[in-house]
Structure formats: structure tokens, C-alpha cells
Length: 115
Ligand SMILES: [Zn+2]
Image (cartoon, rainbow, N blue to C red; front, side, top):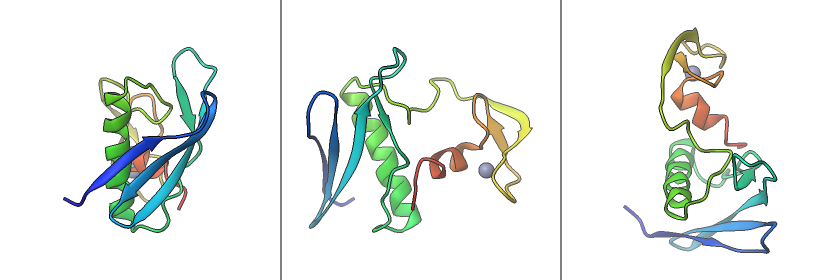
């Protein structure tokens, strides 16, 4: 696995998390959520410089890193993942959605990415 790091930057209310991997770095903007259930919130995350599978890996690394920092965010998965009988709402997906979401696990993740 390649070397990578996350750095929290900016003020207490907003800023980027800077993701560095080898010679590339990407800023992932966040804002203080103002919601008691979350510490910080994210807009759809723009990682267009990487291919989709790579983007998903970065997303998972970000989730683990946020957990290490004890930071709750709007991109966290529910603590208990339950698959429902309902179909995923993503076009042409035949998987079933997870409880509390309109999407299956994969599309839940893809939905967080903008690129
Ligand atoms: Zn799906």
C-alpha cells in the first residue's frame, strides 16, 4: 500500500483535511456541522484526480482516520449495518439498500463522491 497521510487544517469552524499520497495532495473541505449528532460535515467529496476504485479506497481511509480522531461526521456509516428488503435506488442496481439509506453499501459510498 502506498504512503498517505491526512492533516486537519483551517480554523475550528471549517477548513480542509489535506490528503497526501506520494507526490499528490487533495484538499477535502469540511465545515463544523452545528448538529449534535455530528462534529463535521462534508459536501460531496471531489477526488476526480483518482480513478473510482482509488477514490473509494481514499474514502475508506478517511472514515477510519476520522474515527481515530474521535470525530463524527456526516459520511459515517451507521454503526450497525442492516440490509433491508428494499432495492437500492441507484439506477440499474440490483442490490438491496442498507437501513437508513436509499442505497446499497457500494452506492452509499459512491454517493459521497462528486467526481
Ligand atoms: Zn446500489
